[in-house]
Length: 162
Image (cartoon, rainbow, N blue to C red; front, side, top):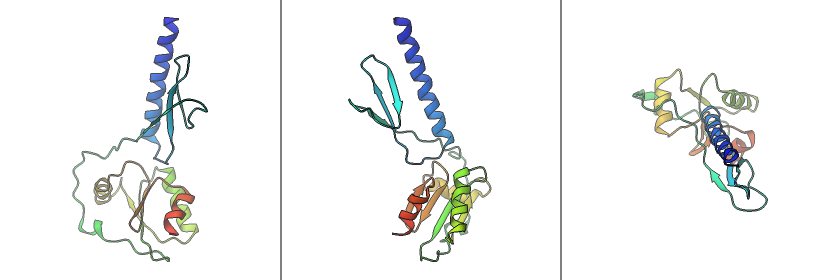
């Protein structure tokens, strides 16, 4: 049985690494991850806590590949975005390869939301501003003075319509 325990530990370690790797690739979307050990000593990870017993909530944060790159922001980098029709400025820090950025862009255009897009891959000033804001995933959306990490229509609407 000692061999089975070692296999379970290796599997659990591989699972943790896989979850961390997903955190590096996927933007933060407010998902929760729970970790617990069952009566047989097996380590579990899930998006829901167990029905019975205690679970530890695990914080998974994507790595920021832009850290450590010295870039000075351009003077216009701090200029406010053009206000939307509802009087709120919307700024989206994005990248071409980001699927959630495309989804947000499409939503904004379809719903007449005026926004300013800052590509962190193509614009060094946008990258510097994103870092100054502590960005750790894309898109990073600013609605007036409020912040949204990632994108979902419901989350955006709740910020935008307040």
